[in-house]
Amino acid sequence: MGALPELDLSADVLTLTRALVDAPSVSGTEEPLADAVEVALRAVGGLEVERVGNSVLARTNLGLPSRIVLAGHLDTVPIADNVPSELRAVDGAERLYGCGTSDMKSGDAVMLRLAGRFGVPGAEPAHDLTFVFYDNEEVESVKNGLGRVAREKRGWLYGDLAILMEPTDGEIEAGCQGTLRARLETKGRRAHSARSWLGINAIHGLTGAVTALAAYRPREVEIDGCTYREGLNAVGISGGVAGNVIPDEAALTVNFRYAPDRDEDAAEAHVRDVFAEAIADGASFTVTDSAGGALPGLAEPAAAAFVAAVGRPARAKLGWTDVARFAAFGIPAVNYGPGDPTLAHTREEHVLVDRLQPAEDALIAYLSGSSA
Image 1 (tube, rainbow, N blue to C red):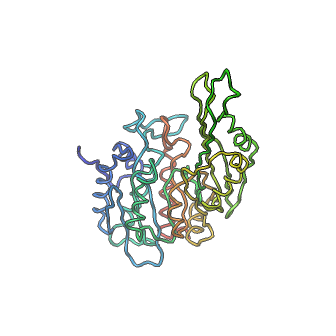
Image 2: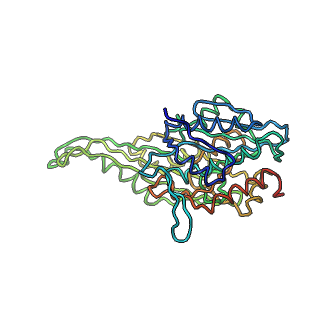
Image 3: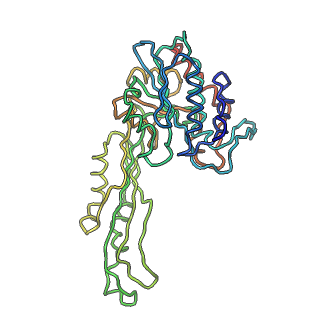
């Protein structure tokens, strides 16, 4: 293992973002970066620091009546020839390019800056603060470091508001959609395609399900002033044996993205109802993945105060994020980060430099109480 990256929490947020991006941390390889984050946080002096696998936790314990939890993942998707970072001016705007710049090492840099500011002895934030830097967000849920923290150190996640530093382009995105994936399978009987009447075509058996999808009209749901758009779509289809064989098996995979006023059971019941005719005709239905959404919780005082600090109305999070883990504990949670979500996971991933300092400033104002 090489030398640990050096993380200077007194450096400006752009410099700190570059240092994080230049320390590769593809999911499953976060340990060196987690080590560096731990070293930097322990050096602050006024923080209790805990390590859970390759997740690093830090918090103040000032006895204040409220606590705000800030969380961000350290991992990235596989590098696409875009590390180390590169600073470029494009169309008159300064942009930092590199894997993780948007999703979400710029958000992590803001968190580290806040830890360095409010975690020192004698600092006076308006709330006690918890910082959670976790691993394995970009892979299957069973490996998610925040899930492990929830299982092993649940008390560290409790607070009056959780702010997940996911890329939102400097806007507040409240709550998140739930997601459900299901597989419909049909069975048939093989036959030579020249004598097709002797077989039963399993692909043709999916016709009812595909027709139901084509006719489906999704809801738009407004919650706390945020509009969540639902969607039920085919995301995969398989079947076929050979060019001269009537297939005896076929499968259709669907994904339902749903508003957080539905729970997982209600979401499954809804999808089953959409495909009720296909199921009655013999198609099997199996849920292969499910994760409930999170209500925005903007009526909660801590959340309302944060919206006021940012100075712009919140919008719905169209996608699933780890805010749902906090919502499961009854903690209102929002997504807020300087990165652009549309650039996440792309070769061209970058963050606009002029988004970085405003995100830090808004959080400083909120956490210090100066925005009141």
